[in-house]
Length: 194
Image (spheres, one colour):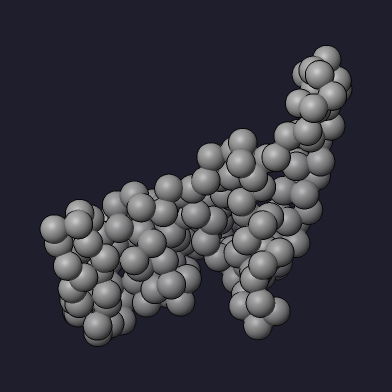
């Protein structure tokens, strides 16, 4: 679990501008702390386990703080993505995060109306947050480590002089590539951002 947490904290969400999957199973594992309460108080194993649990809490809160910053930065686009996703697709937000993003959008719109828009001419009293808030830059380059071999990854050209080409990812290899090219692989867990 410690390895998974360290990898999750340093990659997936931190390496991209997109909100990736939630850490639900790690939160569930933290709830297993009940076993620790039943152990003897003076045991060395207990104190080591408590230190590890505190480290896990710190890393997890740092990870969740990073997610909330992304939600605040790109909230209209994240909510739009959630509205347009198919029912079969997993949500990239937890129910609490979705609630936070929805309330954040409502509060932002209310604040803009009360502070600025009501003082504008009637034809300028509407704001389209989807157009006003910057989109996540999915064209940015990210470092990744391949967890499962992947074949025939189509890489789009950067300039008009270049052509599309196909590459294979070998397990354990590391690459620097445009995020939007590998976004589905990040979501499926086949690669991890580093």
